[in-house]
Length: 335
Ligand code: AQP
Image (cartoon, helix red, strand yellow):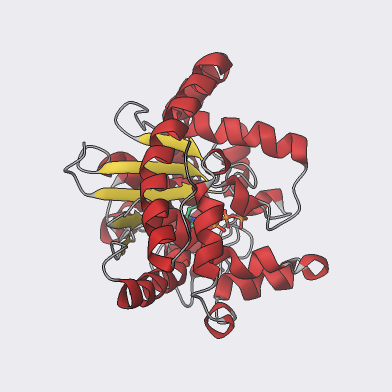
């Protein structure tokens, strides 16, 4: 495990995971897990940047952990853990805050978008979210970070912070690369297809949760916003709704856009939406079955979570110790 290159990635337990989170991120983690030493995190500290119901957040962290396993991540091969179980994340974030500029943080699209959505709670954590994300990645000396396209900007600032730090103190951090999938890098909202699909959307019809029942999935696709042309054709600009459905269908079936256009040539949107719904149901059903089994065994989940946190902390504390020494913090005398 040790000589393989490292991966770090995570999802916030800020709602039920969507097919955007699955197709844009988790599915790729599963595909990469044999070739990398991977760290997959449930980034619960990030979720606090938006108000959460404490009971729900606690429940969802366990649920996301079970979903990771249900999607096919192997807890023996990978280090799967909860961010708040490894205190080095918050500690390194503080240090990196002192090497990050207000100007670069104020350019972050996600901050601007979330500040618009949560006008009554534009907190400092929301602003410094990318610094905590940089700490997450840099602690594990990750080479690769598989994420959806929306996280590209955060990856760029992570690289800038790491390079800035390295230029002062020498090669402390590995400079990570983003791994953004070719298909499904940006799954859009089913009701407003020019907006990203988000798990915390207030409109339930806007997203497909990974735990939605088959009936709900079929209904949400039936209601998805399209256009009046009645031709299944990829054109993101003029046909964002249909292009999004094609993107989802391509990601779950492996078909190209041309193949999809041929398959539905002369057919109506009703047939196409039904096919997309069925293909998504077929993908999610086995995951949901494994998820339901795993959720019956909370002791096992807790044991795996503890094991993940222990290994993650060992690696993270090594990096944090190095950073502390480099910036001039004095080590405690152990006696
Ligand atoms: N719509 C999407 N299409 C492709 N990839 C996506 N991801 C999220 N939405 C899409 C990818 O999923 C990973 C985890 O995301 P996150 O939970 O850390 O935060 P997010 O990007 O802010 O996701 P949400 O669903 O929009 O969360 P909320 O609603 O809480 O803000 C990332 O790799 C992300 O790119």
